[in-house]
Image (cartoon, rainbow, N blue to C red):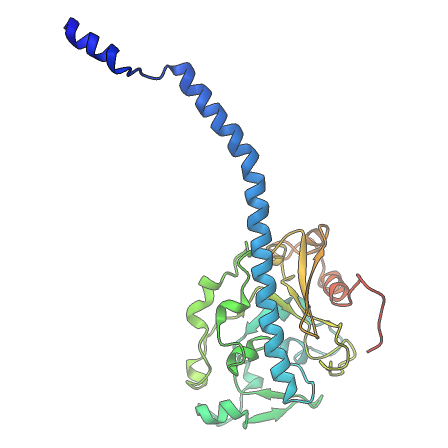
Length: 284
């Protein structure tokens, strides 16, 4: 017995006391408290950069789209199907796909071939002169449908903290080559807000008229759609992306149940962001 105790003392082994263990835990807690804010800022900055990269890719897709269409932006049915005397729901300009309503369908057309869809040969003219394709893809979603931005993940921000994550819709992002019967029956939202192809007067917005015009921002449909909470990346028509700090913007957006702000006030907020309050007004 004495020999064993002597051996233990000779080996130098000693258990931690409870006080020593508590001191170690306290030191680790303090270090984590100092490091976590810095790590959170690094993560936020990384997400902001990745999100800006997605917007640049969307800008490249818009440039290719408008280059063959005399500067015309992809159409948004949110701006086309507005009852007379009512406001369009500008918050819905975040959607990239919506099932076609009955009055948007062609009679006698059950399916479309890939060739027809790819060349946009089957269309009808709306009263305002804009052509509407025979599929549910809408707004920025047209860039995916036409293969100009083929990766669906580009339409989503890694910083998104709301319900419209890429994983939720990934299975529905398929090229519309299977006919109308195979189209999704849900509305698909991305994480970026689209300016739309018409201004408040119903006139076409020309992509090539003003290179400083903001055409895409972070989502503003609900508070949780503002990807970065304290501001937004904005994509201009010249393809540049800028970060605009707006810590009060989130408070002006509707909550998840759309309460707390009228649609008119919501539209005013969205128009204000796209009108670019960060620089002097410019002519169109």
